[in-house]
Length: 381
Ligand SMILES: C=C1C[C@]23C[C@H]1CC[C@H]2[C@@]12CCC[C@@](C)(C(=O)O1)[C@H]2[C@@H]3C(=O)O
Ligand SMILES: O=C(O)CCC(=O)C(=O)O
Ligand SMILES: [Fe+2]
Image (cartoon, rainbow, N blue to C red; front, side, top):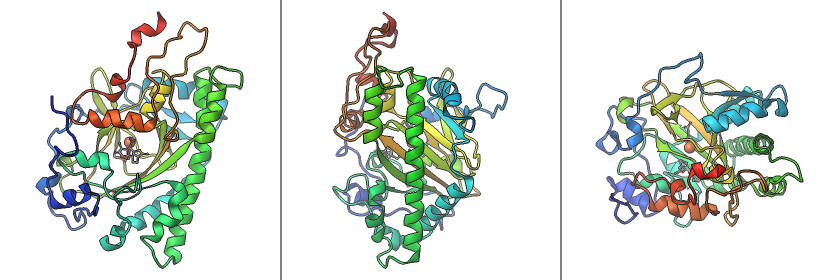
């Protein structure tokens, strides 16, 4: 088994090499592409990519769960619990953020990606710039092939400063873009807090004197967020490329605003198969991340997902990642005195967890299994 490290990875193009050194994050010019260059051809690189795509089945089996919040949060708790336990991901509707508002935000992301390459390059990720800037997230740079996507990552508090790099004149375009992103941030944060409360209820840990009450408050008050804009250009040969390789999100949970153009798929097990999430206008997708898997002691599970591209239409997705602050130890919640009193995972901070995941890149060992202290079956004993 080969464990890839940054130094042992050999980027396949000068562009990737440049980005690798944190210098510039230039992308291949997708717009003009009439064919897929070798640098972007994937052939079952990831063992999960060989799983088939399930046929759409509206009557059950493989239909992505839908959670409707329009009847009130409490009424949706049972559905949230089932979806988080059985799938680790679901469509959220009736959440109160209008389809029009979401479409406006998406339109601004589309305008950003439509800018000339040089304008976007001004916002390139910088060495030591953390998770901020235009370009491939560092973790994804380690794949020997490049993905058919452009991305821009930023923490919401940095929106105004960050996008002055792209729009130095701070004109109308800049203000429209920033306002839209700020609006997205405030609605996703508010929704994140609501959903967090629902998750705790679903776990039977809600309320101040409940075992998780204090933790819930602490998590809610310190929740951090990151926005990542993805643009998956239409592709002349969609079956040979990857929009975003199969992965789990590492944080607590993520809201994904996706274009009405579908492309997101969730992995289901036994047998392994990819289920396409429909492009429902106005819906948000929720995916559970690894640190929520840890926090819930494996009750809710993080879900592998990936993005595929298509021949006809560009697709935009806007994941909003919610997670703990860097210095918070995420400790499994186990109800004192309940039959289940054993933590199955070691307590970790987000950076500690990322370090484990980084070391395992290129292997098929999961980072969650590395920090597991007891087998799932031991929980009840
Ligand atoms: C807050 C986050 C969440 C990050 C890291 C950082 C900013 C970029 C996110 C992504 C986006 C693409 C997949 C992923 C796996 C990646 O490589 O970068 C994500 C990762 C994670 O969920 O771990
Ligand atoms: O494009 C999507 O729908 C998913 C994006 C995603 O999973 C990510 O950026 O982490
Ligand atoms: Fe993701």
